Length: 443
Image (cartoon, rainbow, N blue to C red; front, side):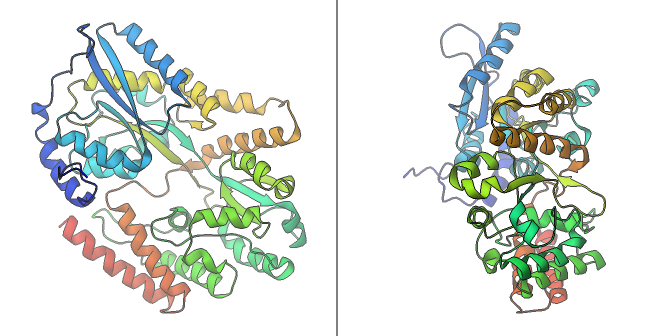
């Protein structure tokens, strides 16, 4: 094991993030445009992605070649990093003064880096015209405290996959469209089929889906000072909603101990009427549980009264150390232009953040699909997912400490579900615990 405290996985991430502020402040010490390693005199733009190699080698190689052709004085060095190690590797590179110039990151970690001064504000480097080419809600989600730290790349939006046989047995032709309709439906599914309607994990470090439902139910999570705002009438109603569903036996007992993977297992076994997931789930289902797949159809996601669905975003960010920030933004804008996003969306089966690319993708998916019925169903699900973006936004903002907030809320909701405290007491304790954390972090 390395004795270097910077690269050691044993160094707590919180400490690394504090040290990052010091390293970020020394951006002027970073290499001024790393020279190419092949003796050709070209400057090297260092670009990192997450788990895209080797599947997308040809695609990214083509984009890189196009940018290099238009910028003969520069070369792109592409490095693909595993999801599980990107935070440690990126922080280690910052301290080694070898930080990449452009990085593909998820919003929570990017937000933490931005809050510590580790990312460049891209507001002056991206024109208003370029910014307007992205879906407005998605572009705005990459901002923090008046600064724009992220360029959006690709998106995913969950839809509902429902077992039509269980729906019919419960007397329904489709799942509910609003959360207020769920309790009666869940009771009918449980009583008439012996199965469960849905699975919503409250394991603290797992899916953020339940946090998203709170926002859909009208809960404001935090106020402008990042203090708890969720102990409100809407918050009390939402906490009561989920704790009562559990106490009445209308949610699987495992929601307090197992994550989203368990929902997939239950659905594949025919024991769950609805799962919220992406369109390609159907392909796996057709392989792993063909009988259940034959009964499955896509439906719009359950939402709150305003109809807002959630969208997950993958971003591109520029570390503040970069001496090639303008070139990094130039390459990011090429990678995320309409043509390249459409090509990537088709190949990766994701959704584009480009407005033009999304319109083109919808038009393509709306045309009659060929192939067997199973393939046609997948394409229908993809079209539904794309159309979901019309009313989608990032429901839980990627603010610093958001994972801590989720852990606090879920832990207290677990206590209410298990009958250790009532739901109002659990919400009050969550408020108290978060505010202690927030007051220490943001005095």
